[in-house]
Length: 441
Image (spheres, rainbow, N blue to C red):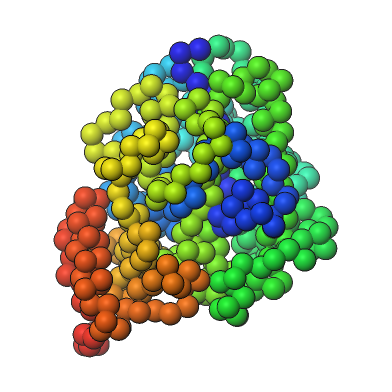
């Protein structure tokens, strides 16, 4: 086989510290921990947009959400956007997709072929899976737009569909299979996380993340056990897929990627679960195992979801096109860190029009004062909102943005943020410090 298969396992709203390879107390993820032990674990991985649809748009294309116009949920991926799946297809790959799409704006209707982002050979999905199913049943749509009803735990049934593809494919071309789970996202119409039966009892004694305990409030005391139950189900199903690859003799020839679109702060930072600059919203697990990703390495450099499109193309032997944001993670694995960015850039939407930088030490975030995050993609004017010293304040309890002692730090981060915004195709904005009084409009 000239190029490896690629299996991309994508969870929704999963904190980085829910895998045992990141937090040893989480002893319920043996399959993903084994992948990390055999492959590469990225210790500091972050989303580029802590909202479902925008993060997916970035991941499928390698372009920032504002470049695509998909800066919030409910905006379809442009039909002329060239996706990773399309580029891999042109290089001889089968392309298959299972689960939540969230890039067609068709709601509860089937996603037509033109809006499937280049996934051509197998399709079993719903645009907004949380609207066509709950934790224990519902439906998706196949390639012909027919409803496929399912009962039983949703993550298990999604994996059944992925196995259906793997067990019935007829050709010897390499495959790119993207499995997009909804778990551990809360079930919107129920207002709760829906773990497998017994989760409340099984996971009630597991340690709670320190940031949640220190902040107080939110709904984590009620919801966290079921959230962990969802995460355990994802590990179980990753194991099922790995077993199938081994049965078919494909395991050593397959790059497996595991990550999430964003994290969850359990209503401790704002009125919902993400859409903020905080670690609980933006830090995600990232494990790769397969050709080019072996040896049980732990990489400490900062990585972004925006680096994954270039990484996938490099895996598939496809030239990385000009204009694609991010860099292939193979460079970090090879130890080429000198030219690697020293910060991760984020765009934040819906709750605000926000921009942020996360360096190894600092978190710096700004917010547009006169813009609505649902209606506006960007702004010409921002105001500093948060500055955290992560080295001394890892749980982000002390906002330093108004402290005069950190003026030089803020000035340096402000300049770099503007540079990153321009590199993402945005107009250089004016950023006010916290001392400026804003006139009401």
